[in-house]
Image (cartoon, rainbow, N blue to C red; front, side, top):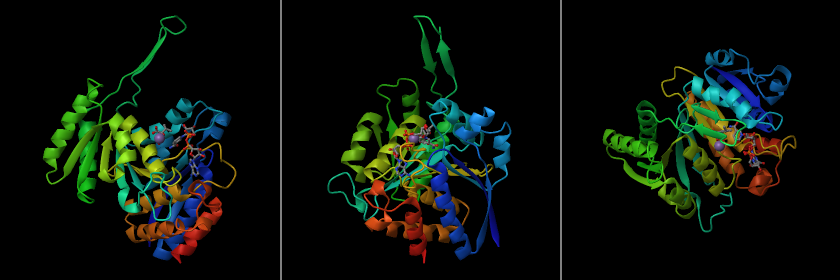
Length: 352
Ligand code: NAD
Ligand code: IPM
Ligand code: MN
């Protein structure tokens, strides 16, 4: 029997709720498709921070390293400043494991109300490929002249040739398996050093990947095109911060952030890749049992795909899509009435 060892980090807020939901679905798939999932759960969270002063143990990264994949809920609670909780857990996982490719699909499903008038599922089906370990998210910089009237803060955006080229390659390779189109999110008219360099590396990637059509838009007008012309997009490659913004806007035009999944990949597979919803800990609905489990379930499907369990991954995606068609099996963010556990029951039922 095939076995996969999964490090589970439920995290904060709705994180544990949606991860438990995802695990129920993944366990059912394991039974049905005859593989086994060995779960190891880590209590790393803001609650742990309150007890111990750290989000995870010092050797936390090494503890997860030996697993085949990581399944994470969400990190962040008002008891801990966000930059402390995130830089103490989520960001080191991505960076220390070199999970440089953040793949975030966006799709409008049948039955889901699109906030854009007149759009159908054929119009919204693209993937944001976000650079996940460098760019605008860098440790370089700091506070200056604190406590004086000259007080300031700065942060250096770092774009390396290695880091930029490899994310471009991931985007072009993905486009090769889809509709063969890549859009670059740039801002080379305004950000004078890094974005002209980004554009150069995009041009270089085009020559490495013939047969792919391309487009490039400045990030400001690109956000407008997401709303006005979402059908233009197949794969969108973006820097860390631009990709972060686009990967919340994308799910918004496709109905709800509660659906959006992500894979944090190390394509070389020398470390475990990590799978997590795009959404956060959602304090406003935490503890009520109403969070949409779809993002966690879809992230779980991406994890199975990554582990080679493609039949199981396809099966859960068809079942999930089925549940979006009926109000009683949709959660409230999708205009339905289902609780988290009712939504999971519906997915299990649709799986047969
Ligand atoms: P959020 O994604 O947590 O919530 C934004 C809105 O979307 C809220 O109204 C919430 O109720 C709704 N929402 C999110 N997920 C939902 C779901 N599954 N079902 C139904 N509704 C859902 O974003 P935020 O409010 O900016 O952040 C809250 C906390 O989460 C902060 O601490 C933030 O730093 C953190 N965060 C963590 C991650 C992560 O761990 N990957 C991602 C984003 C935000
Ligand atoms: C995401 C989140 C994180 C990010 C935050 C919580 C640090 O918004 O996964 O999209 O910016 O990457
Ligand atoms: Mn985000």
